[in-house]
Image 1 (spheres, rainbow, N blue to C red):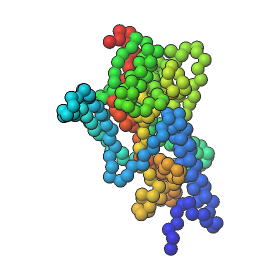
Image 2 (cartoon, rainbow, N blue to C red):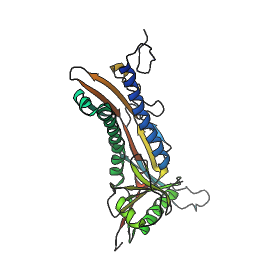
Image 3 (tube, one colour):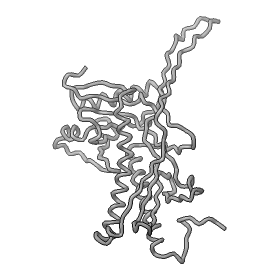
Image 4 (cartoon, one colour):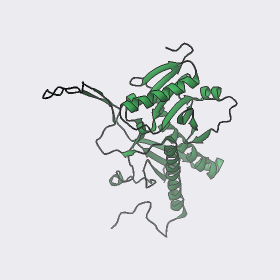
Length: 301
């Protein structure tokens, strides 16, 4: 007998089953659409699905060239190549649950108790991905650092540092992303007629001062400008669509790049509607030393 899944069409389903399936599909579809839009804004083109047992790592690499002027018949000296592996924490599954009681539905109505809490649940899950990434982005352990006297000079310096770095690494740097503090950005923009757009919970400006995208975030420390090439950004994720079916855990996913799984069920024992989300995804940079952090300092070094 074939195993039935949530996506198997049936004509004798009660309305509650159909409604639940629609909620699941709507949730994962909205998450996927928002992510796709953000991916286009940032220029990320390399989502990588995590294989079981693998770890998330980054590398720095350098080569010290020896002289190419070698006498005929002499031994050609080796140029020194150095590769350093930088380990990140394992990419792990994150599990979330939300419960709505029948009392909440009775008190506030279905639209508020169910739909609005689903919206808030989705917003928080999306925001968490960016917050984790920005925390890593602000770590200056391996980043190139400098200081400049004002916002404009700091942005220009950050862009210049990453472009120069990637050129020396013989790597592509087709577009540059700059992250700035929201207050710093608005202080600089003043009354300028600049179009600020919003996607995936972030504000951004396209084609600003040499940056292809400038991200405005309160998570960036005031007085700090961070830049990296879009080519240095990678999305690493766990696909929850098929891995857990043998456990009896079937999650609805978007079906393209399965970044999140979602499941809804009723618990008669507690008289609540339960929603479960599972995801394992991180934005990270392939080259940790391909990030520039420039401080805005009245007395720059």
